[in-house]
Each structure stands twice: as structure tokens, then as C-alpha cells.
Length: 440
Image (tube, rainbow, N blue to C red; front, side, top):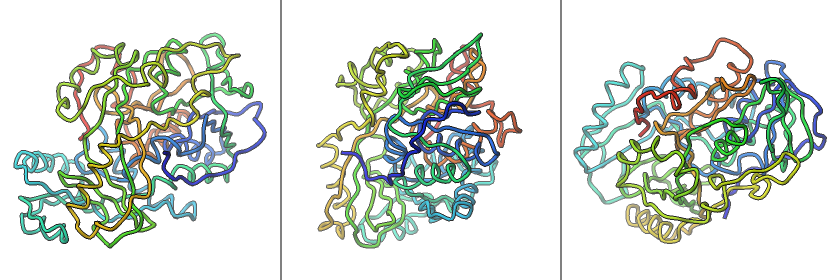
């Protein structure tokens, strides 16, 4: 079942022409539309389903610098500023709270890894503090557990996945953007190696620039245009509870991670547990992903599911005048794994006995789209002038979503990039550069 997400209305009339079409109404696409429209650039945001319905509403909601690959830290730091700023600019609550994030463990190797990361934190002025055994135990009061130690990321926080993307899309509309839902982009209109528009199921929108922020669907969309984008998705299961007792706002433990939501319930998940489904796209890019699979194989199950024949990684081709895979699956809503959901709930109740009588409100599955190095692509596509890509956020995208959208808007508008875009260039995944797996 899909997680509950704020539904916003669509603009009924498809614009004949705009300066930029943004494909995909997740947190990154909605933020890009907002920052483009705020500049006075005409924008149409087209979404095959409805805004925020896929991975942008299916994550933990963490907005963090802690434990990120250093290539993502410039975006992460700027994103935290934007989360504060956007609440003021839009006058709407995105659920962002600088509550700090707490991590605890009994694994000395994990502690040593967090301690080593502090060297990176110092270089990027990230405020983080190691916790002693007594401090880690105090931070998880109510568990009845003691811990070897932990870490507290002081400036980090959380936002509300059910609200963020729709709220930013509405804010973009307030600056003149058109929000078109239930309207799949089938492909690009191209002339002499230059993007000239987007062919949607409802007709053509002429445009001089297009941003593909299509999440797990991005590689399939690119492939139809003859553009290679190495991408693989892993399937995860997650749940939220009904309102319950006051526990820590956001905490990671080896058993499970909990995030308190605005309604007083908790989003609960097991970190790192995911299923890699064998798919035609996955086989195509398997060599590119070998370093990641070797590093993370212990936390990933491998299987074959429906996605082999149906979904963003299945083999598919279509003409622009016929139904595309994007219309066949309006919202990518994989079923959660029942065993995983039962395990998550059991672990949460065992960790915090006060949750014993708190019921589960809903559970859902999600496809997390990854790149071979677990760092996103936010980049112009050299092979096609006017085409830009923002995808492959590897499970880290929600927190850096506003900054990623801002960077994409800067690149499209040919403005000075808010951060160095070099680490996010598409070419690094295609030119034989060594793959350095990042992103914890």
C-alpha cells in the first residue's frame, strides 16, 4: 500500500511551450521547478502519477550530513540551510526540525568507522560528537538496553516525506510553474542534436531544456533516447505506526531506526536491509555495480521478482505515439515484504517496550535507485544539448533534495552553481573512471 502523501491539484491545461520541462515530481524535481520558476523561468513539471508518490514519500525523512560521502557534503550542508529557508519562504511547514540525529551501537568496528568519519566532518565544518557508553545509553532511555557508544550529529534533522515534495511543487506553482499530474513524459522531441520539447501522453510541450528527475525510471527514459545511465534499484520495506509515546525524534540502532512524525507516529525501518532483484537493466550494468555489490553483499538479498518483466528495469521500447511503461505503472508501489514488516515491528517493540500496544498504521515497499558509486548524477548530458539529469540518489536523496534541485536549476539556467557540480557529472560513470563507493 502506498504511504499517505499530501495530494495537490493539477493544472488542467497542458502548456504549448515553456522554457523548461521537469520530468518527475519527487523532491528533486519539485525543488528544481521551484528554483527555476522563482527566477522567472517558465516551467512545466510533469508527473506520470502524482507529486511525491514514489521514493520521496517512502524514506525515513532524515536530513543529515552525518556519515555521508564527502562528495555529497557540500550539497548536504547547503540543503540544511535551504530546509530552514524554504519553510520561511513558502510559509508552509515541511516538517523540518533540527532535532539532531543519534546513532548507537555495540559494534566496536562501527564505532571506529564513525570516529574516522569525524576527520571528514572537521574538514566540512560538520558538528558531530562521539557518545560514551553512558551517553549512548542515556540517549536511548526507555529501551532497557546499554550500548558501547554512539554518535550525535548536532545540526542534522528530519522533515516530513508526506509533505515536502507536494509543498515545494505548490510553491513552484505560486511562482508561475505548471504542475501536470497523471501525465507521463513518453520521450523527447529532438532536432539537430538539441532538445526542442517533451512528448507527453497528452501532447507535445515545446521547450529548450528538459530535466529528467525520474527516480527509478530515469535510466529507462534515458535509454529510449540512446543515452546510457548506469542505475540499479533495490527494494526496501518500511512502516509507520499510529501515534505513540514520546521517544527520541530520530535514532538509529542496529535493531531498527525510528523517526517521529508530525502526527506523533513513527517511521520504522531496518537500516541496510534490501532486496536486489535481477532485471534486464541490472544485468546490463552489472559490471559497473560489482564494487558496490562486493562491499554491501552481506546486507542485500538477491532474488527475481515481477520487476524482471514489468517495471522501470524491464526491457521495453515504445513509439512516442503509443502507451509507454510510465503510463502502465502510474505509481511504483511494490508490495512490502511481510516477513520484513513483521520483523521491523517486533524489533521496534522489543527495543522500546512502550510501543507494545501501538499499532501499525501502514506499510509499504520502495525502490531506491542507486548509481555504481552511490553518489547522485546532477548533470547536463553531453550527448544531447538541453537535456539534464538528476537521479541516482542511492537512498540519500530526500535530505539533499532541495539543494540538488537548486544545483540542477543553476545548471539549466547557466548560473553560477551553488556547489561544485564536478562530483555529480554523468561522465564519471561512463568514461572508465575508478568507482569509489561512497554513501553510508
